[in-house]
Length: 234
Image (spheres, one colour):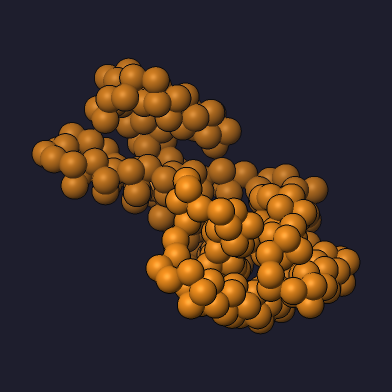
């Protein structure tokens, strides 16, 4: 399993350097040998376990094996056909499924298996944490987008048609619009500011420098405090 995992990395590196959708003949032969090996192993386990293969305690592991073997066989078939780009796209999908073969090795590594089970057991709490973060992002994004939109509308009423370009004198408003110009952009800005995608001061300063008022700058600090010190550290 680990040799196949190593081979998969080499295969991807060769494709990345050569920019050739067709596999090197040597890589194709090795992939076929790996597929034959895992296919024979799967067939022998089906014959030994019989109905336990489908209904035993390791049925989920067996399902992973079946998916990976079928993906390998399908990839080989698509690689031999390779009529057009569509076949190459399908081959990519089945090639990515082969990465799950490394999951087979987890059951033989007790410490790693324990760690994975510990992570899985926290999925419920993780789900509700993510849901709470999304609620915060959505709520504050509405606040900042509405404030920015109101500011831009007032500028358009004062100056007529208003837009950001190289000659604009309202640089702080242009920056504010680029960060909080619509709901999705505002959510992305807030998300990046709490996850390290951007420094939070870059999202904070336009609120201070523009005319939206200190209230919204204070609300940003409240959002930052709630999300980083409370929600993400629970």
